[in-house]
Image 1 (cartoon, rainbow, N blue to C red):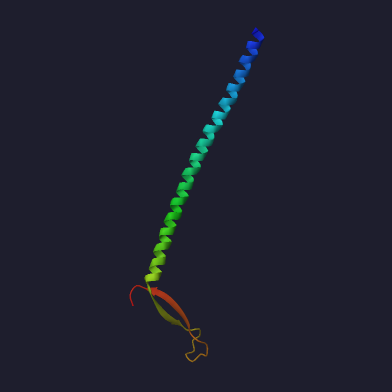
Image 2 (tube, rainbow, N blue to C red; image 1 turned 90 degrees about the vertical axis):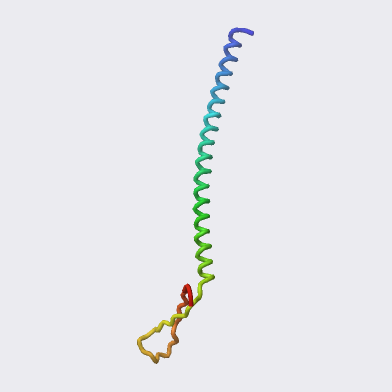
Length: 94
């Protein structure tokens, strides 16, 4: 093998090494981004789980609460022809 062929081959291998180093750097960067994304997604999942626990608690509270009708008059006149509106509110014990 001639000296020039050896020099050309050495230059080719240097270029291949540089390309592999770039790929490795990109891979490490991608890994870091994926790990950060995974951490952020885990935080969001925890937040949604907390929201669902709160919503479930409220749902159970409303299902177990007794409802009481509270009449609301629409005018100051007692003999108004309009019917009373009713608001239903949950109470702990009736």
